[in-house]
Length: 167
Image 1 (cartoon, rainbow, N blue to C red):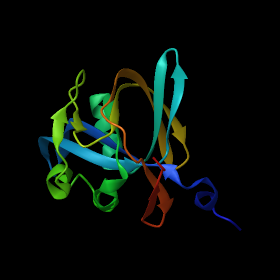
Image 2 (cartoon, rainbow, N blue to C red):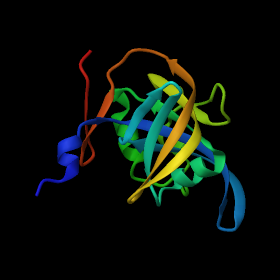
Image 3 (cartoon, rainbow, N blue to C red):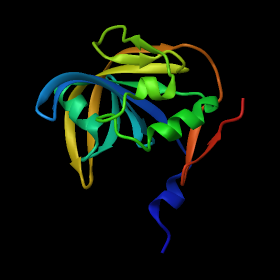
Image 4 (cartoon, rainbow, N blue to C red):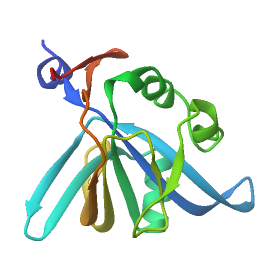
């Protein structure tokens, strides 16, 4: 039987950034995180809505729920190695901005980091969540959109392999 991922890939991969205070080993600390997400989609133009699917055991889901916001960073193909590395470690135990040397900047309207190297980014406030099996589909109200530059988009093929779009 063919697996779903064999049919739906390649899919554009983005990096979700989030930040919140969380309790880790009995201590309250502020944590920032970056997570690769290939399951994401625009949902509505009016009002502008964007959705991301996060696995229920991911640290990023905990941060997004706590803060009520997230930023979707559209990454260029040239960052495929950093994106691949980000998907293999948890932000609960690793400082991912330091680990990948991605440049952190403040969101324009949200208290949330964004990635300077991104081609574009979308700032979202959490509007709703939908239970979706082993994932939670987070619906965000788009509060700010910026297209920084053109570039080849990053597409995930599966099994840690990437491809890109043509210019």
